[in-house]
Image 1: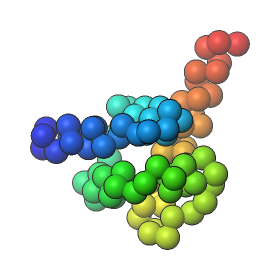
Image 2: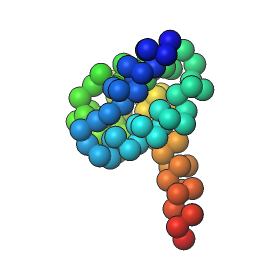
Image 3: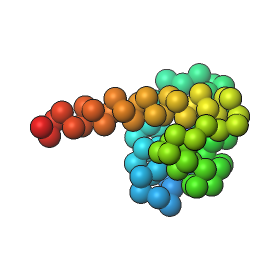
Image 4: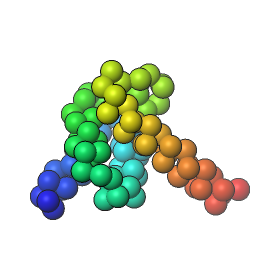
Length: 91
């Protein structure tokens, strides 16, 4: 499983800085706690082009695939909570 995890971690690297930060933070803090099916759809989501990921994660468009949509929701919830914690430290 470690080689698969390394492959998934590499796929988290994106061309857009915003996506790189959001997806990598989620991977580092939450990936190990996901169910196997969630991990599969997380990886499937990573196969999409950055333009789609940007629309889903930042512009609030909804993916057609319901399972990928569930992963997008998890990432967005984590990002909001994580961002709030970071902002409180600097206030």
